Amino acid sequence: MRVNEFLDRVAYETQKQLPTRWRNFRTWRRYTLIQLFYQQRRIHYEVWVRGGEIHALEIGLHCEADAATNARLLQLFDAHLFEIKHALGQQIEAEQWTKSWTRVHELTPYKTLDENTARQCAARLAQMIQTFEPLMARAARASAKTRAAANSSPRQRKPRAMAKSR
Image 1 (cartoon, rainbow, N blue to C red):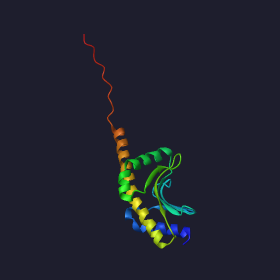
Image 2 (image 1 turned 90 degrees about the vertical axis):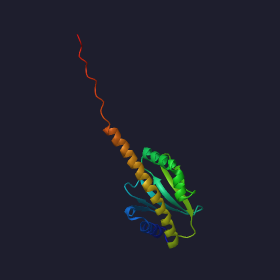
Image 3 (image 1 turned 135 degrees about the horizontal axis):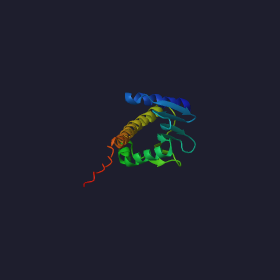
Image 4 (image 1 turned 90 degrees about the horizontal axis):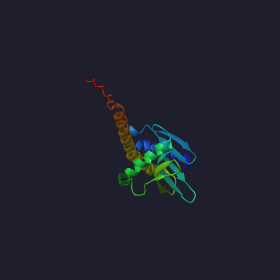
């Protein structure tokens, strides 16, 4: 199977394996990788077919937004790394990938790009999506509540001037 056919198959199989609420992702493919994303492409799930000496599939969540967002997400993943590794296994790595990009990923060796490998890769990707999406949604809700509470705090009243007594 050619790389582009393999990646298309992974996206198709991932969609089939996900609960309905997470099937509406969009995709972007380039050369030897495919990105699956929801709100913004800069935070996406990625499958990268790595050849040469590595000969592995990199499967994971890539955070390629602004540095502050990426750092915040990495802190979130670090704070929940025990839960993440419990759900996905000890081979998962959360790391600062470049100066500003972060990722949570694993390398999975492969022998051939075929239907079976695509289904296995899709199952793993679906598992990751089902682990990371609720985590990111909870963090977003908590952040929104914090902002709402800060914006709705009662204003301090200025003290009234006291009348002078004679």
